[in-house]
Image 1 (cartoon, rainbow, N blue to C red):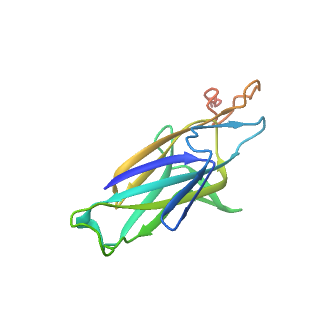
Image 2 (image 1 turned 90 degrees about the vertical axis):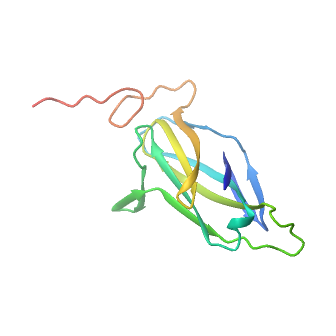
Image 3 (image 1 turned 90 degrees about the horizontal axis):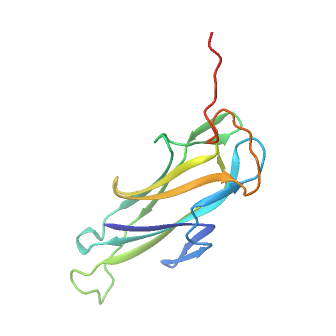
Length: 165
């Protein structure tokens, strides 16, 4: 399968059509203040399904990794956090009039309004179908132009210094 994906400000899939606003984003500018840095974004996804893989259940997984390759933890309650992981399931049939061997397309969307990014730096969204055929979408959280942000633990502006005992 082939995966086409784009980061945007907002994404919706309606009647197998993909609607995106602000497509092609790759950076969020954080305002001064402590983390987390709240980002509003979506992912528009189009999967090309070959003839031989129609009439089967498939799963699209979306993960967010930090620049060191670790899953990004997001709050799920006031006391708990877990890695960002979204799953979108689909099954595309063979409509009448489809030519034997013809591919089909499935449009999907994941909206992530108010996504709390834990620090400044580089991130990567990984999109997979059935555990493989991945697509990688780079994303970065940076200080807003003209602002100064203090370095501290977990920021990309410099390594944190821990006292030696």
